[in-house]
Length: 230
Ligand SMILES: Nc1nc2c(c(=O)[nH]1)N[C@H]1C(S)=C(S)[C@@H](COP(=O)(O)O)O[C@H]1N2
Ligand SMILES: [Mo]
Image (cartoon, rainbow, N blue to C red; front, side, top):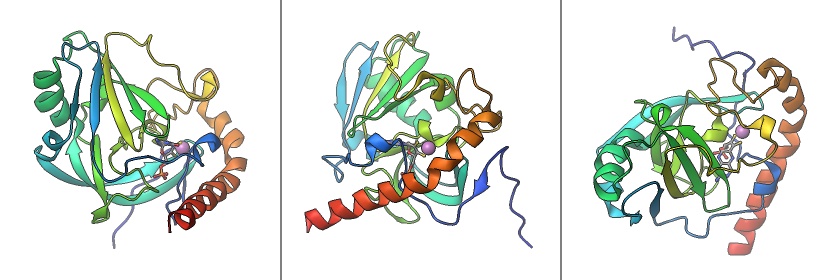
């Protein structure tokens, strides 16, 4: 018998994997979903744009659970891509000259979304820049052409449609999305760090009522986009 590991505190399993996020992003899409192009910026010596360099990193595959802060979890997603650590050590440091004092990373997306994590958290072995999911090229629904996958953190840290990665010496450069209480600097799932100032278990009850309507809105706008593209 294969026994699944216990879900983290306050999470409930979902049997489908919805397109999801803050409502204002439901109608926003990447302009370039096929070609990977990432700018490296921040406190660095040489701001650059990398493309093929990323494809030359060692490819890794990983199966992990995906935890949305609103309490849904979708289990065992097979991601394929590149370790953030390899991107940092083999591309960002040597080619862009990231400052040795950089401790804070901002990731920006083509739809205007942004998030941040301490550099140390991004160097964990299970943090990927993924371009494939379940054996297929990543869909627009789930973050094409490249997304972050940071399974130990709530999914609002796993930025889709990445266009820029910034390495900073402090956190002065990020204006978080949404209300400030919603953005925890680390958002570790195991500690239920859903947000700031308000306990995680309280936020469970605040967020749950919005899951259904948010998921259907994201799905409807994705369908409309597909129709318009035909
Ligand atoms: N670019 C971008 N990344 C994003 C979001 C977004 O709206 N835009 N939403 C975040 C949130 S809150 C969640 S739960 C996950 C949803 O990922 P999915 O759409 O692949 O399920 O993406 C995260 N990354
Ligand atoms: Mo989320």
